[in-house]
Structure formats: C-alpha cells, structure tokens
Image 1 (tube, rainbow, N blue to C red):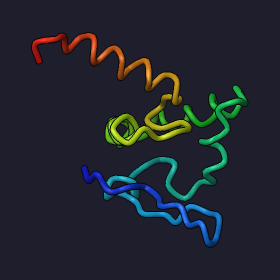
Image 2: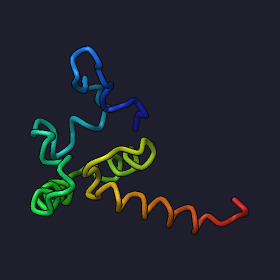
Image 3: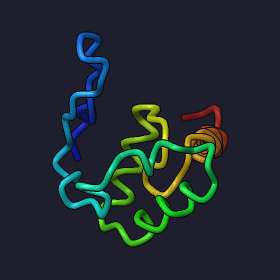
Image 4: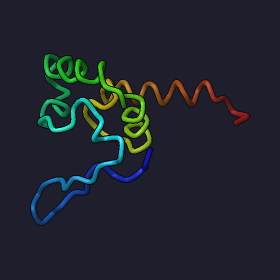
Length: 98
C-alpha cells in the first residue's frame, strides 16, 4: 500500500484533483460518484456506500489509509466517527509501554 494522498485541493479551481494509491483501482467504488461516500449526514447514503465497501477487496487498505490520513466520509466501510473510535480503541489497546 502506498501512502500517497488520494487528492490535493486546488484553490484555483475550488476542487480536489485526484491522486490515487495503487490499490484504489481495485476498489469496488472505483469510478462511482464520490458524492455517495461524502454525505455522512444522510443515513440512507451512508448505508448505501457501506454496501459497496462490504464487498470490496481492498477494504482493509482503504480503512488503514483513511485512519492514517484522517480522511472524512465513508472509507473502508466506516464513517469518520467510526474511524475516530477505532483509532482511540487502538491507542487504548496499545497501552503506555508501546
């Protein structure tokens, strides 16, 4: 897995310019509208986005990327809030000695 950013913000064009890690082309969501994955306030859309994630062969890579890069939206079958919880759980389980 590469740690390159998925996208960079262009102030000039007011849009994200895509840069994708190698695993992204294998993702079930590849080629779909990103709108579905970034409407976390609409439960129906979150659930629909997660249906793609649930059958995705690179879900773990996607999730790890999202945690490491503090992405927003649905990534690896999780919402931003769910990933924050997962990160806190990992930190707790790691303990003070590590």
